[in-house]
Length: 363
Ligand SMILES: Nc1ncnc2c1ncn2[C@@H]1O[C@H](COP(=O)(O)OP(=O)(O)OP(=O)(O)O)[C@@H](O)[C@H]1O
Image (cartoon, rainbow, N blue to C red; front, top):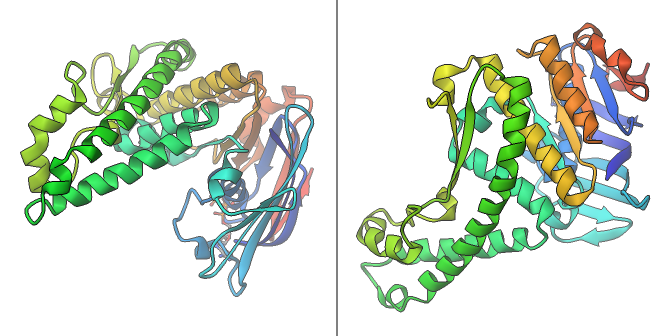
C-alpha cells in the first residue's frame, strides 16, 4: 500500500494542508520549527494510531481548535483505492473510517498501513529496554501473520488476570491453584514464542548481510531470548518462580519478557559503537525488517526518516535510502537543508517539498 494523497486539518501548526507524495521518495525540507516532523507525525498516526513524540493526543490538535483530522488516499498493490479518515478531538475517542465505513477498532485501520519510523532517538531500539525490541518484532509479525494481533490480545488478557490472582494470592488462592489460568498462559506463550522464533530466524541472515554494508568493521550479532530459560519447560519455570511471583505480584517469566539481544564483537553494543554507529545498527535492523516484509508479503511498506542529517554521514544516508528504495518502499525523508541530500538527484521520480509558515509547497 502506498500513500497517494494526504490532507491534514488542524494538526499541530497546519491549519489545512495537502500533500501529494511520490510513490518512491518524498523529501521534505524546512527550517527548525517549520513543521517537517509534524508531517511525519501525521503519517505515523495512520500506521499506529498515535504520535511518536507524545502520548497526549490533545497536544497534536492545533492550539484553540477542537479536533484534528487526517485523511489519506491509498493505493494497494492490486490498484485498489482506500480512503482512510482519522480524527480525534479533546476528550473524545478516535473516529476512523475506511472507504466511508466507520471502524470501532483502531487496529482494523492500522493493519492496512505498514509504516516504520527512523528518528535520531531510534538508537533506543538497540540500547533501550527490551520492550522496544519486542515491539519491533511484533510489528513484523503483526503485518505478516494475520492472527498475531488477536493472539497478543488474548495473551495480554490472560497475563493481566494471572497477575491479579498473584496479587490476591494470600487472600484467596483457590482460583490460581486450580491451574486453568496457567494452562491458558502456557498455551498462548508457546504459540507466541514459536512465531517470534520463526520470524527472528528469518530476520537474522538478512540482518547479517545488511550489516556488512553498514558496519563492515564489526561483528554484529542478534539472538532471540524467549522470556524464559531455553532449556526448561514454561510450566516448570512457572512452578519454580511461584513464590517469587507471588511475593512481587506479577509473572516474572514469559513472552512479555522476551528480547532480541545485541552483541557487537561479543560486547554490549553501547560499549563498542559510537552514537552514529548505533544509528547504523538500527538502520540495518529496520532495513532488514523492510526487506523481510517485502519478501514475505509482496507488499509495499512506508518508511519515515526524520531528520536524516543528524549523525549519519552522507555515504550512510545514501546507502539507507538506496536500500529502502530497492525494496520498493515508499520513503518520506525530512531534512533542514537540501544540501544534506545532494545524492537524491539520481532518483528520477522523487518529489521535493518545502514547509514554511504552515504550508507545504512542492518544488
Ligand atoms: N498543537 C499545536 N498547535 C499549533 N502549533 C503547534 C502545536 N504543537 C506544536 N506546534 C508548533 O508547530 C511547529 C512545528 O514543529 P515541528 O517539530 O514539526 O518542526 P520541525 O520542522 O520538525 O522542526 P525541527 O527541524 O526543529 O525538528 C513548531 O513551531 C511548534 O511550536
